[in-house]
Length: 468
Image 1 (cartoon, rainbow, N blue to C red):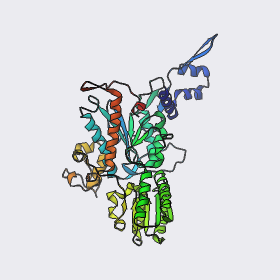
Image 2 (image 1 turned 180 degrees about the vertical axis):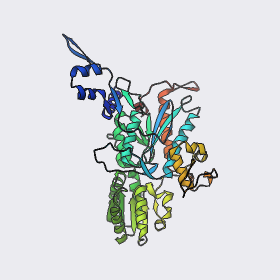
Image 3 (image 1 turned 90 degrees about the vertical axis):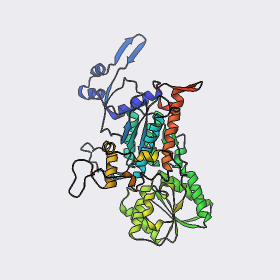
Image 4 (image 1 turned 90 degrees about the horizontal axis):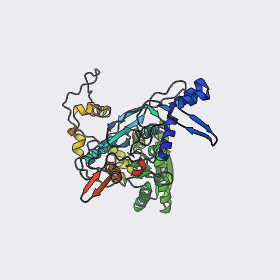
């Protein structure tokens, strides 16, 4: 099978095989044949080779999911729950330390991940969609970084088993049925390079780069949010509508920002709009780069700034501009940041306008988000970090001198946070839809309707490509 061959190739590329060890230690062809079970039958018709199993071990450290649950069919999820990834300079003389996230928790992304678990639990309780089938999930934190997203993609396609034998059936070895995510276009593209060849469907709720519409490059990619091509055209018409013909432009130096701004500038040119400057930066660039972009905005004569940036870049740029306020500017924002409530603290960009996904209501979601008992929080490192940051206390038996212990009086219902704010569910609804889209695809593959009843066989072996 094609997918089996691909999977074996991936695991071999990741593992340390006994075959290689035998070659290195013994250099004997006969020894290698004996270890790997290669048997040559020399007959008049020629040489026939029968291959048995090779033992491979995963290299590196397995990263545990932020949230997980077993099921008959497992769906993967990848969200930017933390803002950054800890970076180290490699000296290539020691084994690199495991990747890890740093910075504070993005509570909006945490809400996205919890919305995925809510949708799956809702489906598991349904008598119409996948009756008798239990969906599981493995939800990971990508730290909004490409290296972590790639690491997670390998795990989702390779499973968590530390040892694998190539003689085993590879098509079901830990591979998820489909993946929801990622929130950013560049991490999404990085993941597709890994899981795409395995035909694992990836359904994104927030990756809007027009480049992802290329089905030749990304045949297994789907999304529940529109392409940026539509947003770019609409933003140009919006600017033209208000008679702003002299503008400045800033963008994230990423697939999202570069592709979106290219589409916008083309549309703006057709509308007769002139651009004074077009600057790019990324959140991991040196601060001097961000300072330079801020200085360009301050010195410019254009009073309108179109910012096609992700939330991370928007936050850094606005923080830099707040240190030395410039004359008032009219901000035009892309969906990635213009609806994020965390940026309301920057008063100088009050009145920013842009286009947003329609608001929605998901019955029962708020109660689910608020249903966090101390025991449930303590069982999850991510929820523990969120709880401690939100209430400025420590869960456990000890705390530092300048910290206090959580005493049980903390009430999440009184917390003002993007996590608990369900008044404007936009992207959250895109996550919800993505889970249901995958569930309906699995339903079509394993369920049959006879007369008025639906029968689903949880023992049906299906491959990821059947869910596409």
